[in-house]
Amino acid sequence: MVNLIFAAEQALKGLTKSVGHEPTSAVILVAGKSTRTGGKTTKQLTEINGIPVAVRTLMKFQASEVIDEIVIVAAEEEMPVYGEYIKQYGLTKVTKVIEGGESRAESAKKGFYAIDKKSKYVAIHDGARCAVTLKQIEDVVRTAYSHGAAIAATRSTDTVKRADKDGFVAKTIDRRTIWRAQTPQVFLKKMYEVSLAKAGDKYVYATDDAMLAEASGFKVKLVECGDSNIKITFASDFERVRNIIEAEEEGK
Image (tube, rainbow, N blue to C red; front, top):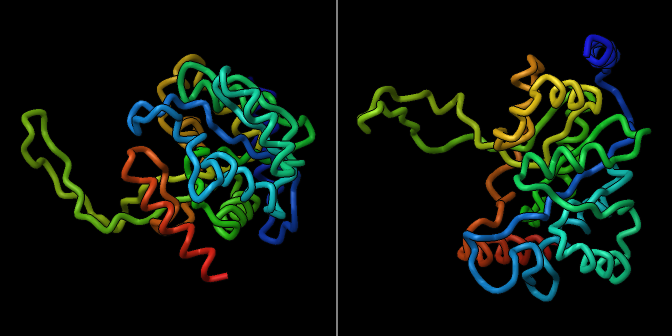
């Protein structure tokens, strides 16, 4: 553990503001059961204008100049489907399709340990965020090159209240300091490895990847990505994402 921490600290000291490109792997999480969207097909395999949600996400990372490798973390029963997608859509950056875990955190961990050993950075992304743009991916990755860790996020526009145990307002929080986390979340590989090691079995309680780095004392830079980078969670989200995608395609 001491050696891991030392290696991460040395790597962080070596960061510069003018890095061109570093070997970067993307871990795309598509192992969810889609219990909240309903329907017979999981959200990642549901088509939006003829293309499955997961494929739309993978195509963005395939096209990104800052991504060198893609590891897909899928449900066991859907793994063969991704083999077909790789061929059909020319997803040449995909090096592995592995089985996911019992939770998102477990899937992220498995994906991380499956990336190329030569990679210096890892970008972890929810496959259900298929409206992510190439610019958002690049902005977050390049910010991580400069700071060691960066996540897509957007500032809260709502007034946020903290409640007491009885459901009464305990405090109004300054919304200028509140951000809603998104993905991709990008980390120096050595930093993420230290964060997992420090977390031990507690990593399973992390609802996003930045929590691990934060708990280990690392600073994570927030990158404003707006509110279009939606994660499909409910059935109503499909229409919202479809509108975003169509607007982007019409603007090209």
